[in-house]
Length: 278
Ligand code: C2E
Ligand code: MG
Ligand code: MG
Ligand code: MG
Image (cartoon, rainbow, N blue to C red; front, side):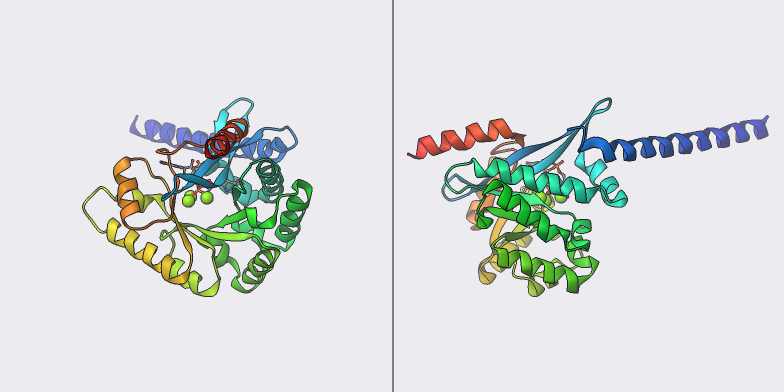
């Protein structure tokens, strides 16, 4: 009896594995068609200048509306797209779409686009950026590329050359999720980043006792010495905002200001702000 149960368990486990694998395969093939089927959309989240309460940039964040599963989180499908190579096609779509939207925003508001490490493995990313800029008419200085440390881990020589080419085009480059990787600091030494985005894990712990506040203070100081803008990610409370202001953080982003919203909603938001300012 015990044996039978054992075998039963095992085959149940195998079935589970098989199901997981099949689900994954299905998702992979759905992902390959998602661009052509128009299943992607971009939402935008404002990044605010903390001293003036003014929007400087909006970050484009990708959403996949799966016909049966509903919204799939980028945390789930971006790694899959990276493994299968689909990320290059998706990334080009994101760049084009983000630049086209931003070109309609008033007041020189910029757009930040997340670029995957996989897109940096060949020179196509430079061409994709140039095409997105020329198709939209967006001036290069209004486009900011957000990269994580994994971009630089790849193959530093080629990647650094690509980053320098992009900078020569006038595009800005931000280091995303700063402080979560192994060598964020050493990368600041090897490339002239325009912006450091302090990871939300530090911001989240600002209210708690512990070292988060001291770390945030140091990163802001580091940015100031290097002439690099610092942006705090994931600001959710007034208390966090107050602390960041006191520490002299330049910019912030988070649910406290706004959740990521549709392209139409961000258009309204930036237009109204323009009217208020006028
Ligand atoms: P990220 O670039 O660090 O983006 C910030 C994430 O934090 C977004 O999650 C955003 O919705 C979320 N967030 C913003 N404010 C708050 C807050 O106050 N509290 C909390 N808890 N979360 C906040 P999202 O949209 O799910 O994106 C997750 C990650 O997926 C992004 O992290 C980025 O690494 C990746 N991603 C998103 N869109 C793209 C894309 O177009 N291309 C690539 N390669 N990656 C993307
Ligand atoms: Mg980002
Ligand atoms: Mg981030
Ligand atoms: Mg992240």
